[in-house]
Image: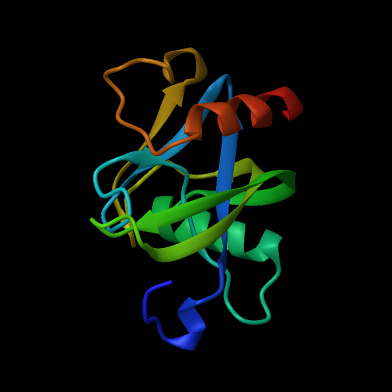
Length: 145
């Protein structure tokens, strides 16, 4: 393991807000590393003392201006941010929370370049550059919606 500060030697808990509405999924194009420019779910780090559900709802609003309600946890995935030499820079544990749309139109904010709805059946298109696992998590959430 590279010489990292103690706080970075452990996985970082974060959330993904997965919103499915009318057979479409809400995605944001990331403005910051990792995965700059790729489409993925709104999300981010969980604040100290914040519940998973509250973090998902907060991140959803900060990145898209969409108001939502947390429903249930879809899955949890590991996301490794690697250096050019393949050493681990960050290790995130991403908890995907299915959220119900309450109101709003997607407007990119905070850490997003764009925010938009995508048809679920177009997620496998080569034209849509997405972060790893987005299509699979969206399909899992759609089965619960």
